[in-house]
Image (cartoon, rainbow, N blue to C red):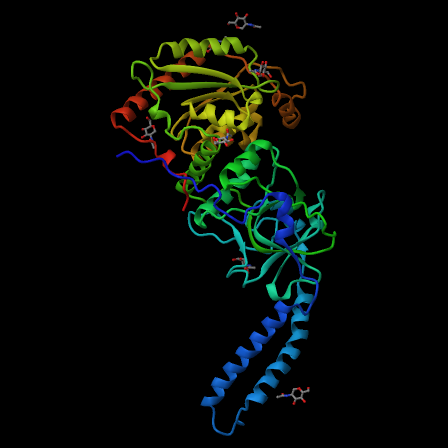
Length: 489
Ligand SMILES: *[C@@H]1O[C@H](CO)[C@@H](O)[C@H](O)[C@H]1NC(C)=O
Ligand SMILES: *[C@@H]1O[C@H](CO)[C@@H](O)[C@H](O)[C@H]1NC(C)=O
Ligand SMILES: *[C@@H]1O[C@H](CO)[C@@H](O)[C@H](O)[C@H]1NC(C)=O
Ligand SMILES: *[C@@H]1O[C@H](CO)[C@@H](O)[C@H](O)[C@H]1NC(C)=O
Ligand SMILES: *[C@@H]1O[C@H](CO)[C@@H](O)[C@H](O)[C@H]1NC(C)=O
Ligand SMILES: *[C@@H]1O[C@H](CO)[C@@H](O)[C@H](O)[C@H]1NC(C)=O
Ligand SMILES: *[C@@H]1O[C@H](CO)[C@@H](O)[C@H](O)[C@H]1NC(C)=O
């Protein structure tokens, strides 16, 4: 059964504004204590209190004094007056705690983490872990922040406050705020993507609601930029360029509260495999839509003989972790590709491709061969079940720790097949002996050689597997599911 291409309701959020007019419209200062809103709130509270009391007193023994309307409104007015100091006390009682809690520095990523450490996440089995304000767990309170430090997160602080009793001099920011905690770096597209992909899961579960602003934290310190690739991906995903809050025009000690906020501090942790795949499906689909790339999927591409085309792409790097002899590597892949009907080899430097050129290239790729590095983050932009071949220079297996497996993880999360790694046994010797840390700094920038026998064998196997898969898919007239998931919810 053929499915019609899905429609993307791109401008899903009509309140999403361009950054310039954004701030004016979405900020509100709560400076006067007896604002009209507060008075109305107190009046309503007193009316309901007395009405309740009144109803109760009807059932009470007749000894209670009869109620006159005059008396009633006077009491309401008195009550309103009496509650004002209580609200004032609530406002004074809002307590700010450091965003970075140094007591948990040794387990910064575990449990409630050292970021907003007094708060627990909401976590249902298999779903993303998050905090939302206001919410039932927050008892209807809003999230407030104070401080603009970019060097030490223990100087920035957070608090919860009821909307009727925001802290003195607070500024209320309207709309939806995404608060992202990243233990690493928003400039690195792998780390930036892992910290922000979880918001896509929330977006899918919450009627495709898009953020009015992002607040980016690293160790509780504010960050104002993210990698261009990541910014454009966010624009494509949420239907508008992300506005990164800088708290301009807000004093250092002035509290800022958020009408609605969602906080993520555990990346994709806790999400089931299906949820992760769904998250990357949506980003892939929206990115292709945004870049005007066909949503048909690889199954649709056939050559002149009607055979499915197998797109193999070699993504090259310059500098660290580039190939020592690019033409030799290209030559081997070319030779193997030529042996397979329908195989097409594409070679490109990721560094001179725009975001949309990368999206387009990945939409034409079934097998991505490339050294370990940020450019590999593009792998989720291929059709689901496509293949990855990863290359490492000498020394990584022993010294790089779990970080070397991140693209294994990303391949698994996004429904790709990681076809293994080739590790160069040769390379510069480390002059620091057993000092792993210092040696890694050398290996990190190492270049990658090749072994003709091994590369030939590996490429041949991956190509043959891909060819088999294509023939099976074509026989089953399979429609790639990943292209029909652009609409969320
Ligand atoms: C309201 O307050 C005034 C002054 O405090 C007091 O005289 C009056 O009795 C109060 N009325 C009621 C109904 O409590
Ligand atoms: C967070 O969870 C812990 C352990 O379940 C609990 O003791 C604590 O009271 C919770 N904190 C809040 C603010 O709900
Ligand atoms: C996609 O197409 C639309 C309409 O033709 C155009 O306005 C937009 O600039 C294109 N986007 C890209 C990234 O090429
Ligand atoms: C690169 O490899 C090719 C083919 O193996 C070889 O002919 C060439 O000399 C090599 N180039 C360098 C700079 O080693
Ligand atoms: C891409 O970048 C590489 C290295 O930075 C350069 O040699 C090459 O000419 C560039 N290609 C294009 C098409 O710009
Ligand atoms: C290439 O790999 C093969 C098989 O693992 C090995 O026998 C051979 O010695 C390697 N060649 C070089 C030049 O390292
Ligand atoms: C992915 O490819 C493998 C190997 O051909 C195949 O067995 C599997 O069914 C495919 N998975 C999906 C979800 O298409």
